[in-house]
Length: 194
Image 1 (cartoon, rainbow, N blue to C red):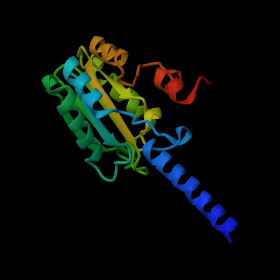
Image 2: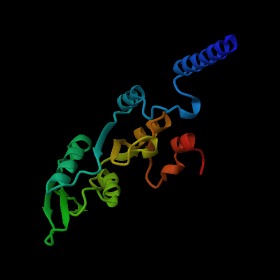
Image 3: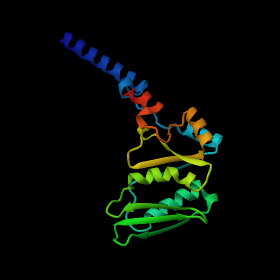
Image 4: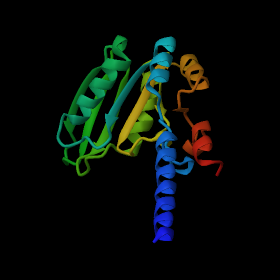
């Protein structure tokens, strides 16, 4: 009986040690999840480099007007000085949403299929090219989705190229044009080189 009590007591002591140890040290290293975007760092870099961020759900197309509403919101936050007019209509066969962005000397067209509620892949390339298309010194660069976005979210930062590059050098996990996500420093740090 004494031996049984000694075994039970030792087991409970060992179990208590593990519980207290892991509670003090959060989770075991193999399970520790890093906060992908520390809020204080983002706010500091935004203020320091005069950056604007814009995020949106990529599954957002349900009716005529949704694509233009999204683009109007993005433009209002990132390129308000360009006074871009936004208009949307359906294609004659009703298969495409067509959004036309215009100023007195520039026109840019965005399209998306009506049979999907997801933004098409070409939307993101066109979005990243939007500031340059309207003659702005600003650029739109995406946050690295490998850092924890769900795949349904998109998050961009807008500012001058020099400011965006400086912010990235200080830790803002941006993906530059023509750069693959797995080539970024964040991806290599989190997942290793491929």
